[in-house]
Image (cartoon, rainbow, N blue to C red; front, side, top):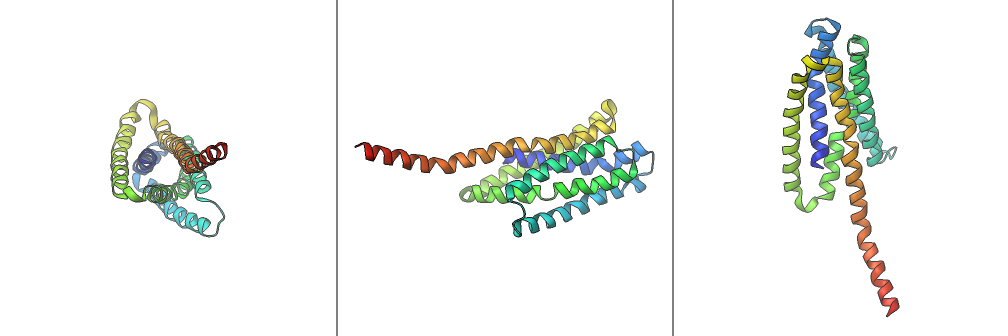
Length: 198
């Protein structure tokens, strides 16, 4: 769960920190003209969280489906921004889409953690916050160092790839949770078999 949160915050902060500069430098426009790309991203985040909550409330998507959709959509949208960062219209529109998909990830992961670790919520919250804080500082700085070597398009692909990577610890956590939930039933079945044998 800490790894998921760290990857998400790193992707979110990395994207929002550099999108305006990337658009400005790639499209050769002023920072003021490129600023709506960040506005679109944050607006998309808000809309995404509202839509995600409604999708869960109405039973349109399960929590797991929503998170997988958000991770995949955020990663693909981020790669589109990276590929077309010099095109202002595409950058603005797809930045909104990136925010739309990124929006449900944070509350979704936190909701799952609060249910799974209800007896150690304070410890889990602290670990997740430390992971998020570290990733939020490290990834944007790393992106800044890489700009001169690989350029803005490749640098802006990093948050998208990091977002897609969230699917790995998320699927492992779900598998481990299913295994933990099935274990008591398996133990009971084994006990019943031993009773029948005796």
